[in-house]
Length: 177
Image (cartoon, rainbow, N blue to C red; front, side, top):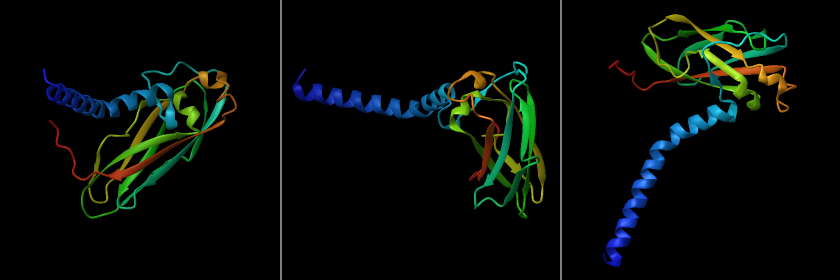
């Protein structure tokens, strides 16, 4: 094999490797954030382990991107819950226009170090929501705070956690396949 052919082969392998890494970076980053709780990323769970007697206040925050003409808010701005116990909060969204609009929500938890202990069982986040003109919907979030929050030195003094959602418009709704 000539030197030029070997160089071309190595350059081709590097290009394929970088493309593969680029393609895999989003799912790998998502897994990394879920495992570590980086940037307030929450966990997903099936069932709460049960209350331990300690309490924490969960604040609920809502935001809407300026180009999405919705009103979006929590039904309650805060709840004091038992750590480890299953809880549910509701948010309402209303389309303020005369045309259907599709939006999707992202979330975060603060303080960021509490993210790995905030576990959502059911959530409307990352799901496209299409609201008809003037339509208002209630959206539940089912969650618990892992009891390990109380024993982690980095979070043992956390008594308030904020769950924040921001709704953004979706350019075009996905059609079911």
